[in-house]
Amino acid sequence: MAKFKIVQNSPVWPLGALLLVLVFAGWGISLLISVERRQDEVRDHVTLISRLNFLEESIRDLGKEIFEENATLPADSLMMRWQQQYAGYMQRKREVLKKSAAIPAEIQPLFSRIDSSTVRMNLLFTRRLLDDPAAFRRSSMDIQFHQEMNRAIDQVKAATGLLRDRLSGITAELSGKWKSLSFLVFISFLLAIQLSIILYFYQRDLLKRKRTEEILRQLTAEFRAMFKAIPDAVFFTDTNREIVMVNPAFTELFGFNPEEVVGKEPRFLFTVKKDYLAHEKTLFGGEGGEHFPPLEIKYQRKNGEIFIGETVSAAVKQPGQPLGFLNIIRDITRRKKAEEQLNEVHSKLEQWVNERTEDLMRANDEVKRFAYIVSHDLRAPLVNIKGFTGELRNAYHTIASRMKQILPHLDEDGQEEMSDILQEEIPEALQFIDSSASRMGNLIDAVLKLSRLGRRELRFERINVRVLVQKMLESLAHQVEQRQVAVRIGALPRVIADRTSLEQIFGNILVNAVNYLVPGRKGEIEIGGRRGRHETVFYVKDNGRGIAREDLPKVFEPFSRVGNPPDVPGEGMGLAYVQTLVRRHGGRIWCEAELGVGSTFYFSLPNHATNGKESV
Image 1 (cartoon, rainbow, N blue to C red):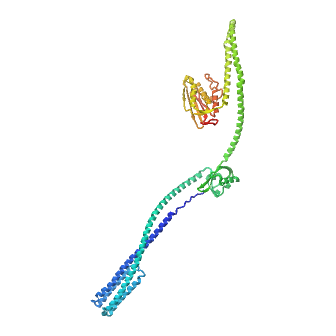
Image 2 (cartoon, rainbow, N blue to C red; image 1 turned 90 degrees about the vertical axis):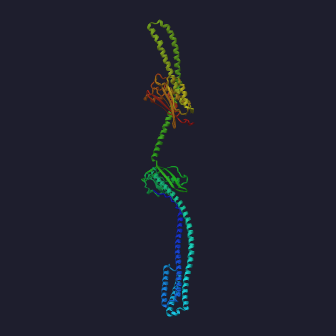
Image 3 (cartoon, rainbow, N blue to C red; image 1 turned 45 degrees about the vertical axis):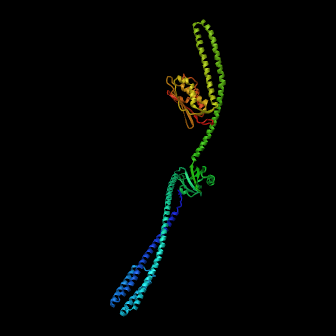
């Protein structure tokens, strides 16, 4: 995997300030060394001047001591004394020269002249004293001796003067150097403060940079981990269209190792040239911005196998600088095959639905024709039957009154037979014909009602279900009190529905709940509901007779009377009405029951009107 590196410019000003401090420090050290050297020279010059003064006094003392005592001492004693004094002077001169530091070159000739004068003083003294002791005491010799002595003293003073001049120059130079050193100390102090401030900010900046680098390392590690963990194939191309990096899923999908693809254009991955050109146009055409629409492209694996990949690309940029493009590929070959199969199934299903729709339309037409037949062709004979039954009953009453007059004239067996016919058989037959015709009329009315329920226009409105249920219970108040039924009403959310339909739904279910209670057992009915995300479910629960498991599938069939209880009136159409109305609302209806325990009827209504005009 290729590595990306972010370069940060290192600040130069701390190094410059440090270099400036080092320059000033070197200058200060050189000044200190120079000052120390000059101070040593000052000490040497002061010492040398002091010793030259001592040497000058020694020369003066030499002549002074000799001439103060030459009047009383004999010549040989004077010679001995002179030699001792002169030897002492020479010893002191050697000590002066030995204890002094290196003597400046311009003063060394003066010392030679001092030596010459003192040597002539010694020669003059010894020669005169040895040659002519009497002449030694004359003033002329004294003058010559003093001239040499004064010449030596002048040379000493000249050397002292030169040393003093040099000392003055060195002192002036030292004063300048001390001023420079003081200025340097002041500047160094300011630089030290500035450097401290600079180092503080530099250290703070360094800490920030370290934290940034640590965050960058962490983000880089997280990026690499996420990049490797992406289940789809990913390859990154730079602005030169060359592959920079790929993830393990790419190798698994295409079969190429990173070393085989990095640095190459991804052209070899595409099966069709126009797909590659379309992909390149999408990335470099300047129309997609930073995110591009997904493309379905045919790719080729290393082994030559072709597959369809869904490709999503995104531009990767730094502020003001594009870096490249991130391309994510997902193998959708199976999905495309499944879509083709699904489309094929969908086409077949659509054809089947069209065929069933045509069948349904034909069936609906047949139902309409059947309803017409029921309402016209069947009802007319039924009316005739009812009418002629009435005629027969009237004729029977006439015949019966006439037969009462004839019965006394018949024998006993005839009377008994005619009495059975007139009082039992004929009335029972007439009653059976009349009740059957009435039942047939009720069945025809039920079929017509079911047909009308499927065609009636629904008017949706917001309904307070609690108020509606309470009104329905008020209409059943007599039966509820007579059977001593305990009714509990739970939460009943508001819905949007057809009010008439909802009244019929709750009315039929509640009537069944009351009618199918167990005689002699205190009845309990619970009504409630709950709102879901897409639909609202209502329920009516009772502790009545219940329903056998094998009868549950027939509960909502027309003319179905589960268990066929003789004490419950009706044609078995109530729940069929309810199912039709619930389905017209786009809802569901079902039942949960246990024989001898009770039943719970559920129905759902969508949270929006089926015509889409209003929502809850």
